[in-house]
Length: 414
Image (tube, rainbow, N blue to C red; front, side, top):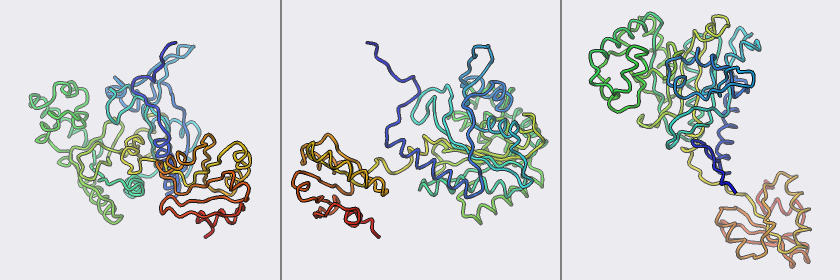
């Protein structure tokens, strides 16, 4: 028989990891809806040129990381490497952009990139994202950043928001010209692999994670030196709004993010000391919607790596609330009716159908952190009772078989 294994760069998610994903997803959807974002779902594959046009033909995502394929009619498709292009395509195609006050969307799901497998990075990974479309006000920037920070705070993940602005188009072009000249004159300070981008896309070099480049560009020109008064005032207003909202941020003069469509504000959520890999980030993309066939519409958004957020969550194990142990065939048969009533009354209870040794069953329940154990053996069946044990303090008592007694014994009658 052949031995089947998962594809390289993928992973099988156990129940503790999927539970973390559920916590992240449910909290994100609840918070984003509370802030006025409607949750949507989009296809996991799109026409290849959607990503080539929006993400950038010279970007590493497009040149090296996209999973591309031809269907049976030889049409070019790609598994989605990111969420924004597909969401914008859906918003234009389905005429979702009708509100004069702007429209806000959130999404959650699997994405795909052909990356070198390493800790925290997978070829199939999960992202959550939020896009705010229709407003160019700096308050929209602050709101998007606040949503990202609020989510991480609610998950008790310490973080800092790194913040920068790419300025307006003319400012950015002048900066790119200056940066290009400096990089050309200082190639020796840059990692060899990054030098290819000096002519193609010098901003990408600022986003490099290679240690030689990170160290070498410290003396490079900084984009804030090219800001207009308007851009400078907008950035100052944004930092003021974030301070008022108690968002922990720091200005990063070299933050550009890795996608071609960003304009003006860019941001990234990193570990609280600023040195860890980013949990997620985003920025403003005022030109993307018109480039993809829609009206000239401003927008801002972000995406987060769910796998990375899940790895930062403190809880490591799902702890069942109550374990029900029926001992023997006759006890199991009668126990099912009791357990089904508990389920129908919203009591979280997990039965041990295959356990006949009480000592082993209690040891197993204790090892996984169950709060209560209910024992139902021949003695209890004859007396029409249940033995309820509090696993935290060891107290146990015999109770009659009825829902009010069960709810009271489990502390659910308050």
